[in-house]
Amino acid sequence: MTLSIVIANWNTRRLIEECLSSIFDTTPRGKPEYEIIVIDNASTDGSREFLRALNDKITLIENDTNAGYAKACNQGMKAARGKYVLLLGSDTLMQPDTLNECVNFLENTSDAGAVACRLINPDGSLQSSLKKFPRLKNAFYTYLSFDKLNRDYDMTDFSYSRTCTVDQAAATFLMIRKDLIESIGWFDESYRILYNDVDLCSRIWQAGKKIYFLHTVSIIHYGSHSTKNADYPLRKIMYSDIYRYYSRHFGFKAKFLYPILAIRLLIVTSIKA
Image (cartoon, rainbow, N blue to C red; front, top):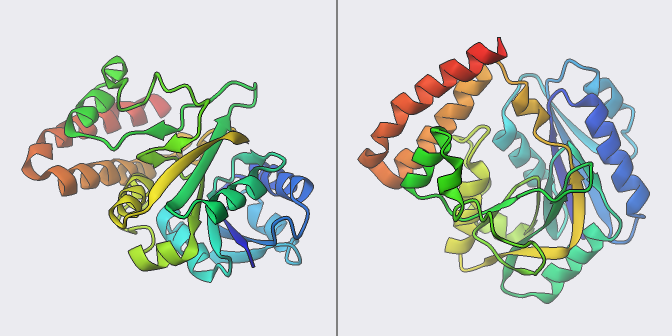
């Protein structure tokens, strides 16, 4: 088995149907040899019933509760049989040659621990999917909505027209060597929804491997529908993940972030209500 595609799903019935169809349509079996592992986090929108009907094409892991993104992905990665593991968002559409090119890149680039590709909006425009590792000031700018001051962190001026190493890439599409992730550990499940990918990318670099952005291939990405529709309890977990990351990396200096996140949580959830 060359590649294991791991997809966590929570209430994205229409999107995951399109996602799986795009994989089947663009990637014939054997080019590369792959398996698809879907972990359903107790969806109530018909996702589970649809996925069960695909038992001859996918491996389905069903959770009785919403275990969170990190734990669900870990379940999939631990079950994976492939030499490489692809973390893939359920809100994506695979494009021709993307899987094959990324596998070939890892096969021929010995210092690469992981590779990412271009993320394209449904209208054909390019998404910003790469970032540098965050510093404490970036949290201040981000969560007070001073986005213009985060241009360096957000890699705003990056052209996305060249293949190169990057600090971190979105786990919407991140292909990783299976033996590497077994050696450095899976997602840290204390980050249930957010910042688990930042933490993982950091550990890939700490292990002496690099993360590459491959500019010649792409997928279409609709956007984070699960988190956009999050209610207060789910958003509280998301904001806890944010605070946990900065507290672990910057200690007492990150204390200022707590009231900012608390106020932001109340504002966002009141608007959603």
